[in-house]
Length: 129
Image 1: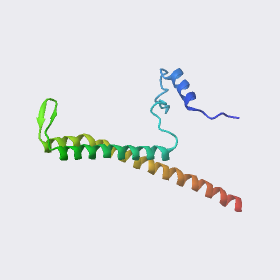
Image 2: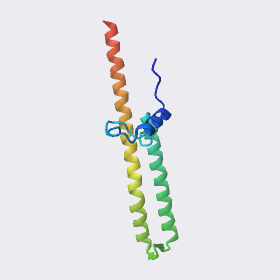
Image 3: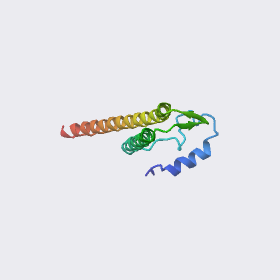
Image 4: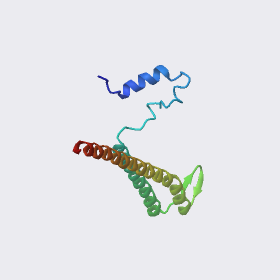
């Protein structure tokens, strides 16, 4: 009977062999960079992260619009418009990247579900014969 590998087993194996030549290039990925095995949870996390980042962005922009005060950035005094542009340049790439990752993991989840259903459907056909 084979025992299912846990995250701790992966860490121990990586710690024992991460200096061996070819260990990393042979498809063994560092356990700290592996994604969770459940793409549904990961996609929900990235969508939630994108929503929180968008909330902080909009709260910051609303504060800038409401205060109509000039901000300083690195000692330089910025106008109201420049401040909003800087907010946009910092936050939108983060928001879009998180959203993109959520979409990618959601697509992965759908693909895995379709493959599981195809295997189950194929097994049912064989049993009917």
